[in-house]
Length: 263
Image: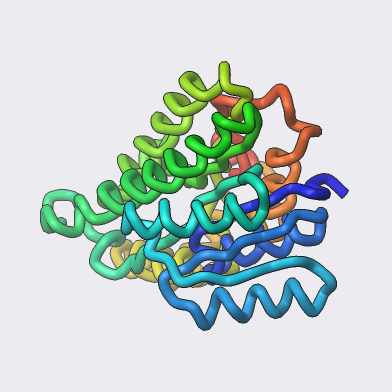
């Protein structure tokens, strides 16, 4: 198993991406510590993992609360005797954030994703890094999306938010690399199985006179594979990147766009 005897903290573990990654990590042998702003969905994922023979615990933590993040991680580090992997997969509602032109977008809704994603990624990565530095090993994973690197309309502040997270990923990798810590991003492309993408595609589709289904099909048709990535594919790549099999990878972003963005 790729992650045997590893301890992993997953923020936003009750969401589609976070839960898929948590299950993949547990399947590969990791002890997973699941975190979310709502406890019920996180507990449901923990039960699913436990019923499958894995080791999981759930906790109610707001990843935008700096002190709450640090307090929880202190308990995890003591219980697990260290922290090997940290990944932030939180999401925000897409209503009033996407599907509106920048000239019509309020300052509040433009800033919301930028503030949210950059702060929560910084809080969780910094807290994990402090423990990993003591161990001289660890992996921090971040999640972004294709608008970070493309010319995209009607995505509001999401594109600059993801671009900022990718820049933060590189900065963390530069500073933490000498301490034996790797920092890598995963850049996906409109995963159709997630509620976030359903909301975003509905908003953007409506803005251009298309249904959610039509807009999603158009996105899929623009990739060389003529499809969009699945939750399973993103989760499996996350497990690989977090493992020692990817030990030479840091300061980069895994391209999961199905070829939409060439590297």
